[in-house]
Image (cartoon, helix red, strand yellow):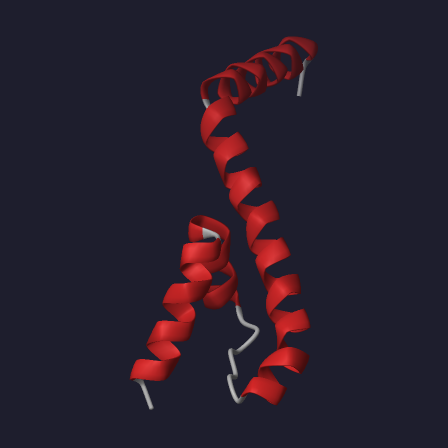
Length: 84
């Protein structure tokens, strides 16, 4: 590839980053919060076993906690209770 093609590709990448800056920030924030939700679910396993409540540590539960926060935890508990 010649020198001008590299400059065009770099310019195109900069334009794409500028256009998708907000959606990428939202996805990054959701990924971080979902990771923290997974850590919370992992920590909740010990306490939940004593209380008789079990929630799986999986990506779907982590995404629910990442997107909804504490109300999402209540929703997970409610769906687990309703499924019994």
